[in-house]
Image (cartoon, rainbow, N blue to C red; front, side, top):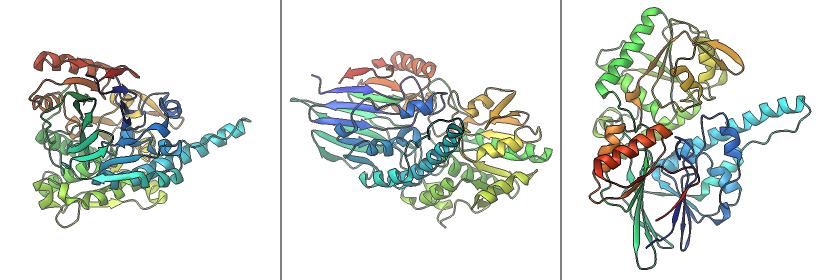
Length: 464
């Protein structure tokens, strides 16, 4: 017997924009409300009217802090949402800095576009949301611990399991009561790979009627951690020998901390010489401080290394404090290691560093995270001979390294292993992957385990 419907309003046959709407007998629930990123029309799509009335949403569950899951929360509140935003303790700490940083970008972009529009006789452009909108949204956030089963009322119980993706990331279990029956839905969130630095491995769920499953790397495998670290060391050693700089576009939350952790280990073991690593991201500094404030979520190795409240003991980590310090980095021509956002090179300070280094054959660009279709990072990875950066054409002559083993996402084998823990045969909705990856993974799940699988289209609705 059906207890409601689920509608896929984001991350359907694409990687970003996570958003799922549950319509239940006693109310409506959202899981995630994230940015669409990477596509040429992403700005316009993030401004489209919601496919639901924000005032009619009772609860929102947030799986983790990355903007493709959380980025539209301030707009949701601005347009009338007044329920509760429920997430894990660490995610609640991270989304404040994350969304405030996003709002500043929205404000700066709107200011720049307004100047262009006004010069042409047009109208000013309003930001998608402001820092004030973020401050209005944050009081709606409730925090819960992993493993804590909570009765939310309206026939809903919930629990977050550690997804092992970034600090605070969760897989969400929902028990939904209908007329004389109860259904259990697991939203995988973004599933981490085993052995991810600092945080624990994913906690496995074992039973559900339905699973909403990510498939970012549903059609490929990662290198193992030893090969990943060795390739990072090779990239830096080779670049320094040629007299160039190393640029690492990295997400401020997750990848930056992992890269620092691995670099520290490589220097401590003697694989790399003593390094100074510059983090050119105010958000990354705040995120690193939040990471260090949650040792209860670290794995055993990280607890030992980070016991002193530092990200490492063998490398020197320097955070830029101002725009002037960021600009000064571009005067360095050799042996710099610069980690800067954004991870897909869509805005942020990495753009400035690419303009000064991407055309230099002695330099290297190291990609350590997924590059969505349509992003500047994806164009570079796919072998573009030149790219446009803020209206200026820049040749791609630096060596491009793609080190997939740093990804915070489980690969195909690990995604299958996560599903293999289910003792029953749930229906699986495959989402959060490019269409080819989602379709390939859905076929494999059906062949391997005999689960019924669907790859929803955007806006498609199913009874549950």
